[in-house]
Image 1 (cartoon, helix red, strand yellow):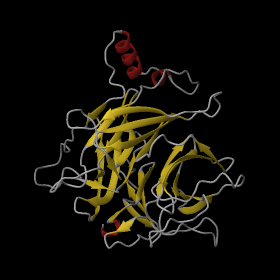
Image 2: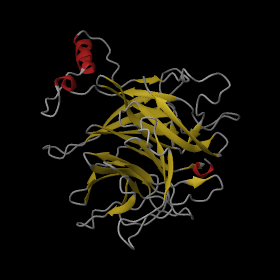
Image 3: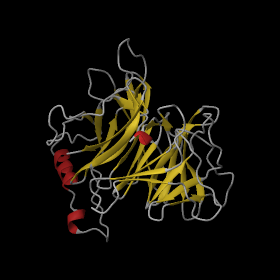
Length: 370
């Protein structure tokens, strides 16, 4: 689909569909403000495989988002939430903290705007990171209109329509993702080391939340992802309570030798703590019994390594039904692509991006974790 050849866009999974918005085309122009809807393999038989959905407002004469690139997006219940970005001239859009919401059931745009405390509104930005938490939104970092790198973190309460600031990240975050009540971010201070930071989002605790940091080496002698930008970071699961950060692809950071590819094509997992055995009324017995947590407690009891907070490179295998010479078996080096994790947490959908020679791609991939 030539209309979907683009980079610096977003892809957001809501239910059994992926929604692509914005970005830059292969000619270097901004893509139109249409939404492109692609049905995932789990969609029902009657679901249209592909639709181009025009930008229609929920009410007559109400605004719709302008074309943009380098914006942030995530799913918020049955909606696609969009924040910030740049216009055709590359200038950061000044929208006063406005959040755009695309209703995937009624196929129209709405807005979320703060209704109180105008002094508590995040600065305009591009390249920010937007994640959902408990039906609210968290905005992390980015670049302000002067291209200054931001380390601020903001929480938007969708019920009170109020922005509140959370603790700044301890370093410049290049990727972030939400796992339960914990916000994770990755930074790269130099070519020999990087850090995983995490912040527990708990608003009713006596003590304010503080960031914790785990440093890891990034050199050929020790397993771990090398520094990168414009890659992907999502939380995935292999089931039974075992969760991971999946960190993949992106532009190389630091010195690149002559002849080396400018982007990474590798994928890495970072093992997260197994889910705690917390009794909740809505949980069934099968949900409450967490095999990963039990296994980790046994290993800890006997002094064995649980693998927690450790990196492992993902072994990529082609699908079993793909015959030789039938096509590419791997997306290859790329960056600035749209991506999201499916609702089951076991598949990652990605589309487009910039390839190793700087050209925009128009292909889509599904990575299945097992």
